[in-house]
Length: 94
Image (cartoon, rainbow, N blue to C red):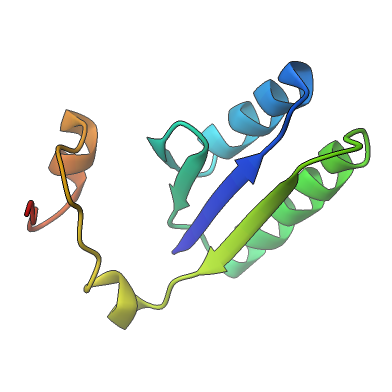
């Protein structure tokens, strides 16, 4: 799984990035996506994001590779969206 977050000031580019990410993963917060994708899909997505960022003078995209063992330790504090809760085997809310 990859956790991808972005901080982009340009509305047009931010929208393009969000649209691209929605094709690869699920939005879990406004500018954060969880992407359960293959290594090949990751390479494709990475290249697309690099191209989109060439137009951006500010901001960044951060990508975290979350291993399967670490993903099992994922914890949410607060209320998740219904779609997120349905995707997980076990929902932990503190």
